[in-house]
Image 1: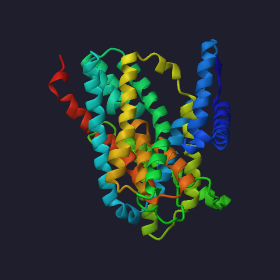
Image 2: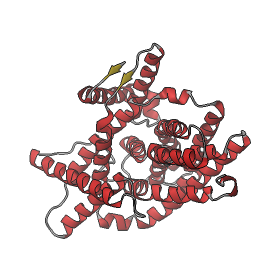
Image 3: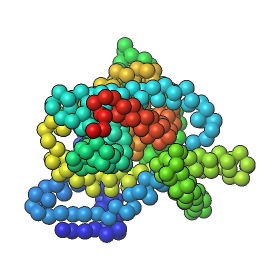
Image 4: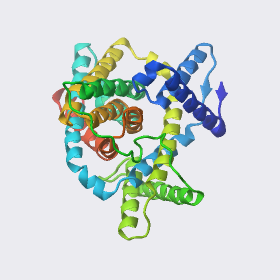
Length: 402
């Protein structure tokens, strides 16, 4: 077994990003279907590691940097959100929330229905529904323990981790092709006219050059560090209470308060261009580490019926994004970008959603409303709504604890 330390892992993650950029640049298929660079590079490395494991060679990474990078990314999302923008996006956020709730209900109904049809415990259907797909690894781990301890479902935690891994991979793969299909409709003679080009902001086009200075870099880094510290402390205070929230939500909230509080007091204006640079660096490295660390052999351990359920869930996600999300969001370019983002966190996680949208906007042009709505819904609302939906399903008669 080869164990890479902190520095070795950081080097590997950087190489994964360079590999992903090279692949997307040279492979027309990846470029045409808007596959995010970290996803392309990370999956290639994960497949190589899977092959090496078949030769009894296992490589492990130091993933201690993964959580701080994710939190730093959400801190920059918070620091990029001003109350004026949030107010402008209020109605769109509300409509998008309807799409999100609809998908959660459909995912669980699909999972439970297929599980019963295949002769499996309905809990497995719920576990391969919104628990692990919209919920991701964190929510999957939490509910997996509950299903094992309270409902007696064997190997629930292992199944949850494998299902969440499946969703993370597919969420990063289908968002681009879905957006490509929808954008073709928008630009077709019978579709709506594409919106006029706008100047990109924030995270919309990560490769756009942005001027920075050493001092401004330190200022922005300090804001991110304060968001991480205060958000972690806030999470500790809320732990075990009725208001308990995931750490990344607390960090994002502190970022929003910092940005708008300093601005309202006339003390400091956040340098948005630099925030986006640091946010994009954090996002790219986080995804690279997450994807190159995937244990794809866990997916091979899933029985055929579970694969059938997860494959059906992937198809449902794509169809839902095309026929529901895109349409209720307005059937225009922004709606197509939102659909790509919905695929990202509907199957995987918010960082995957951002990467999907960046791959699209980098090629077709900016979408400010999408980068306002998706992080807000993906961070603030999805976990809370998902818990409510899961508990409502668990109240059904066939989930009664024996």
